[in-house]
Length: 261
Image 1 (cartoon, rainbow, N blue to C red):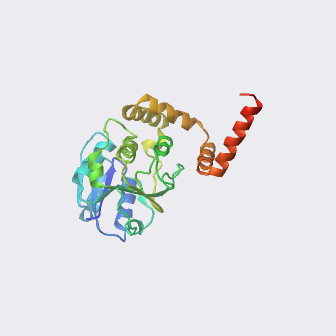
Image 2: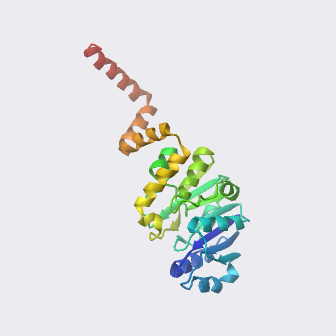
Image 3: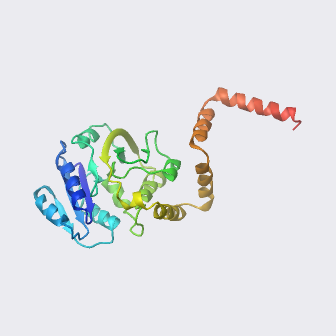
């Protein structure tokens, strides 16, 4: 089986129905569908039961939040890849999965683009720690090898940033392979906690960074993050151009000579 689609939901009956319908209309069928509900009381369970014959595994019980629910779904998954399309988020079109799995790649993480979210897509030009420090890989638009996801279960002590922590562990610390496509995978529901609680997001990110990296490393990234992105881009281009770099060095030497240094 190529893919396990995991949907986590809690008291979002309308969002859950949209998500389920976006899964069922896919033209690609080599997947299993797992729904983890956190004990909803708003009619979500009735929606799940209505679509039960299309769902390979579902449960509705109280848990500790979104990340415990995602880990619970991950433990049930059997696909080569997993994708978390949580309640309220929807596949952008009916042929999204067909497009994703038509690419000739065996990458550990395949990531597409998103719509409906003001945050920029990260990964178009490869991925680096700086990209993750200043942004995030779109989790809903990512297809992750199940074995890799099992090696880094979502840290349940965080409320917002455990998926961000996962990508740092997988892509930076483990140096896993990464493939980006401009294919729009997901229409994002902007009502989620990660999009509405920026202060908690900031605090949890700082906690993750302190957990994973020594202060000497973080000091460098704080400095890089304080520099305007266009200046960093210009510096990168200059470093790649031997002609421009040579001119800058000669001019610097000339200025030093004129100053008598």
